[in-house]
Image (tube, rainbow, N blue to C red; front, side, top):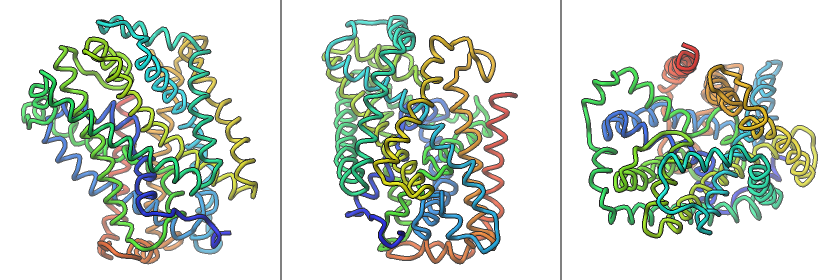
Length: 458
């Protein structure tokens, strides 16, 4: 079965699809905001250092496990672990991660689709204040039927693409979609240069500001940069690993990881070039999280000349970014089902579509009929709890597992990891990195895990 596994037709297809898995909402609603908050260019430099030291090694590990085993995480450990070891038991807590992520990611993608359609059709009132935009968003959250229809639309489209196969569906559709995503983003970033608030927005965004470092403290800035570099690539749950199984061996994994990280970071940086000049042009204070997209930027676009078009274009870009992640993670889920149960792709798609839709219902109702449920206390929602399970538990623990698996003699073993990583043309990973991988990375991941809990419950 491994020998007959589909492979991407082009290297560009692999790079864009793997980058599409990494590129998501965090690139737009978190990275630009924390960059401006924590010192502009200073934060970017610190972030890039962590991306190089933490994100890229983890990315190569997950790709190495995939390319060496030619299996999803449902079977990868059995193929690579030493006889009579129990590494494969870890799949039973890693696999649910993709289902938990998709139980709310499809809903958020549905919000983006709703805002895209309403912007292009002139559905938002011209000259809205932030309060009015907040009311618009609240009305959407209070309407479960509208959210369900929008969510179902994007989930069905994504599953149909996955049902068509790796080459005919995932690669053929995702590759042009990702190219269009970059074209849209570059076009909007170039357009930002013409806005009256461009200079002020870029100064806030990227001008080195040492006072921000002093204001927040070095440790807080380091933790924010480390966390962003870690979570931006979505490593730890096997979503990236599956694309390693479809790769050829013409290029080293360090080379491929560099391109993926580069594309991911480019999108994050350009998103800030789009967002901050627009906010400063219309005297709207930028925010973080969902409020940035659905309240702050909707306010900006509604006050902009031709705002319906520009708003629709921006939300179309966001739909592409989010759908690329849906397709990537759905492909991982389908591959897991096919490996575990030896079922056809289409049967796996139908069954998993039903499972994902059912799992999405509590999150959807958490903003209306179940809004009195606060799993993490305070004003937390069911979505917040699902995000906590993924971001603060499964991703860091899954990444720690990959580190231990490739460095342990009973697992894949570091020599086998090096052999897989260094096959092909491109930069090689040296054997002395074993000590860094074995002792430093687990500590870094452990610190992130503890800091996440302290941040929520401390």
